[in-house]
Image (cartoon, rainbow over all chains, first blue to last red; front, top):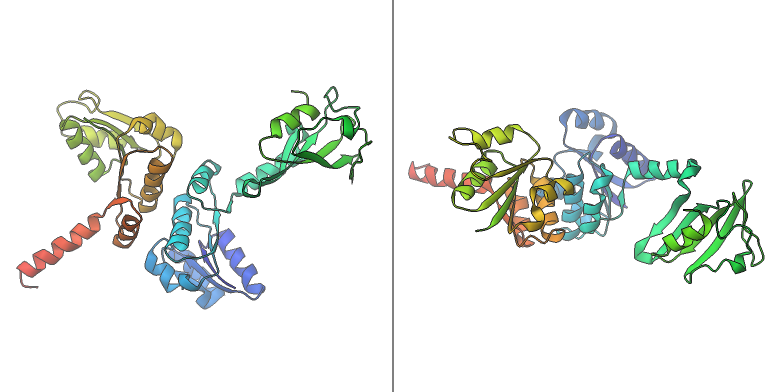
Length: 219
Length: 143
């Protein structure tokens, strides 16, 4: 695979190293002269100097034959442009963009730049996972595939507490796929009784989240 | 009379803002630097607001700032910050998120300006004009 990485910060540099280790062909584009020189010492011809949002810089890197373009600069507008130009001008099939400011994610969505990865969002999800008072955790969210998996902590006094799974009256399009109780997960049966303090994993169609959450948590 | 929102009031943006206001349009300027407000006032007998101009401090990429500047009501949106990629991104936001009828975008890099123009954006490339003027001037002096 031939990958072009734009942005030689920590993310870009380490990504280049990993991909090279796995035997892939890589070009890493960096526009800061000092960073580029340090990169070139280590990576030699893999490093290229230039502004990766300039068409000739992308062309010099061979963007037309790239299998993957990764835009991980520290500037969201640059990352958007790099992906947009790679896709629409150079017909690159696969690209990954970094979102620096989570507020800008809406623009990546608006312009169809995906997947867009935000370290802040990832860490926030881990925090939600580790800090139980959040109650609800998104484990998987694939709107394109209409698939969503959420984790909910069952609170005492909720409609689900003390009820068997078959009597939960879950909305159509949702199913409990796992129950975590005292640190162990198991797949529930129809007669499994939900207890307060359980964590349930629910697979559901998009849009049912609120209805499902209301069954397990007390608002 | 049109309502024109201008993001980025450097030399170009502020001059266009003033001439559009003088021509009787409603003009709202968005810039992250308060100094740009002084640029709008410089050499004028009255302040920007006194003659009916609007000014919002904020970044062009922030939806809240764009809304505060009035983008939802804008007939024309001009992206004229110093960053080509910011301008190109914000111009597309203005088109696709806020459905502004006319969007003009300043792009310094001729290659990007040309390609995005072919994609349907109204790009204006000052560098292109500078190159042509140099070429014309050189042909006049026999270069």
